[in-house]
Image (tube, protein in one colour):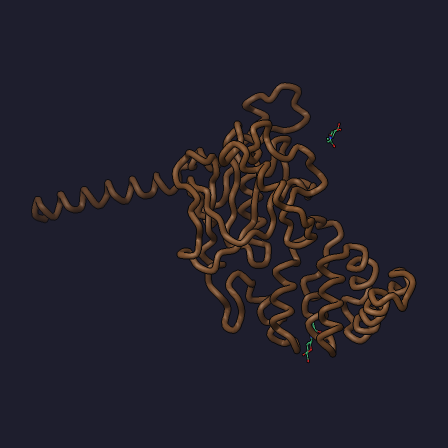
Length: 298
Ligand SMILES: *[C@@H]1O[C@H](CO)[C@@H](O)[C@H](O)[C@H]1NC(C)=O
Ligand SMILES: *[C@@H]1O[C@H](CO)[C@@H](O)[C@H](O)[C@H]1NC(C)=O
């Protein structure tokens, strides 16, 4: 072996070692310390570092896309939150699981994230309290913005970008306090479907009479109550209704009225004909021909 080959090999070894250790090293700015709640005083022994999975590609940046869920933990999804907010590992895993989520953003800074006043101004501008997507804080957390109007530490947002080029970098580096990441596998569109839809949901929708409505409902199927899950297939049931008016009514029921979803739609999630009859009743209710929604839940 020549000395130059040996030198090159030595460099290669150094490179491999430094890459490996870099990969394996935790990115401390992407992590938070989670302490067991029954500890009176958080002791290091009661605390663990919680970090997002590498597959979520954490970067020190404020990256934005189309908003799906503003603040995951404010909806009180059990097990996902710490006293100060969502855990970064959960922010990552929920984005992996949620239809259309391929960009997540988590506030790591104890003093809050973004510019002073940013959170307050946003909340004042959001007059419409949409059920889905969730553009406001949920009911489980009334501590919305920090005293100086920033986003609180621990806030986790779920978002969608059409491609990495579509990602809006509001800032890079530590200045905003945000950690964001894109999930590579969910930046690819399955054939015939929009970016961010999982392969399973894609094939379910493509088999319906109205794939576009099905896609649109799938984007709005993120749920906060795992103890009372709403099957994603409801989107396909709505999309399979026999007239555009019934499709629209079914979508209204699913996205605008939680009672209609749980008391009417959910009862017939596995029976297209029964679901269609129930949605006809909801349409009559909305047109004032049926006195109460409860009539439609039989
Ligand atoms: C916020 O929640 C706390 C209890 O967690 C309660 O004491 C307080 O009144 C609430 N504030 C508002 C404005 O609802
Ligand atoms: C929707 O209807 C198609 C036939 O038009 C059917 O193959 C498909 O299974 C239906 N999907 C659901 C979820 O009922």
